[in-house]
Image (cartoon, rainbow, N blue to C red; front, side):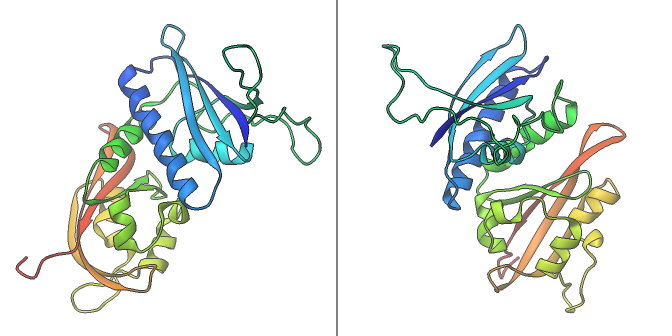
Length: 249
């Protein structure tokens, strides 16, 4: 695999945010690798005085490194193929020399759409993801447009789908896949589910539903969702916690 350096300049980033973002990058790499992609987050160096953060990845391609960073919701300025040297100055035997760019490889990766000083929305989503990754309860995280940006491993089991396959799904995709129904068996419009209420109404929602998971299993769930706000009138997304109800519940 080749070595890639991701360069980002994020003035105002705190050590707490860097720690959460590092864990998000490591988790995204691990879950992509579990899905058969060859990518690994190796290490990083942060210069807080200048807000500059360099991250090193091993990967089969630049596109995989870009995907890891976009899935982790961490902005970046550029991705460059590089060489890694041992302490004695010799190039690591595992490293291949950077390949000359040709028409197949294209130019260096341009800045991500999130590049520049990290807006409050990115910091909130990074910290929300960090929160979700630590829970044993299924959690679903979407951006302000309802596009899926994260669900944790307990959610994979209930949804019957790896996160990497679901990343980027729209609300319409959710509705088509999950086919949520109420206790009478009626289809519930996706924007009337707890998550939809949190996105459109900017208020918490709760319901008992039945979903048709991606693995073909129909499961009853109970879900609670609430909006994520950067400021009073600036929604950045929504988060839903869901579980299979017990017979006594």
